[in-house]
Image (cartoon, one colour):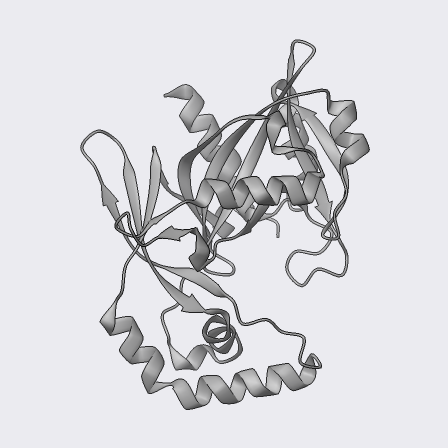
Length: 253
């Protein structure tokens, strides 16, 4: 990847909210392709020894921009096997555009501010060995509150990913705020981007950090970020590049 700029897009910057709705048009498309989806899923399960889990994930529908500068992401939950079928058979044209959540840790330690990257494990399917901002993860239906117009609490999901990927207590997190919506053009996957304010010692983060998906963490001073990107351009996950660009725009605003 020599030109990562062509592999990502900062779609929107602002205070991000997310809501899940029912979409009959999407449901009809998925229902029409049900037999094909089930057959693809059956074959995939055979290949993986029945270890695949059919969870849920949000599918991006549209953006609603509010006058006060806020942004609402409208989504519709689908099953993982439907997303997998699209990846295996793009000709199905299911129109699935999944949404995940990614964070940029700002670690305040000894009068300095640090960002936390980590190298993805070599056995990861997507972007093995690439540097990525930590944490990141998927969003499932359990994050949606049916009693609040389907509002999706993506922050709580990112917080649980933070605890899982760093092995630190959530008590170290001062604040999580969603500030951008970005797209990995390579994989057609969207992410809600969040700033995670953390107050602790980076030595503690390094000591605690334990993950099956990542190697040891890499701490980059915010003031050294441009130099770090220049040296590692071409080996940083597109979503992280988009997140960094959006973060810089947010700080300039």
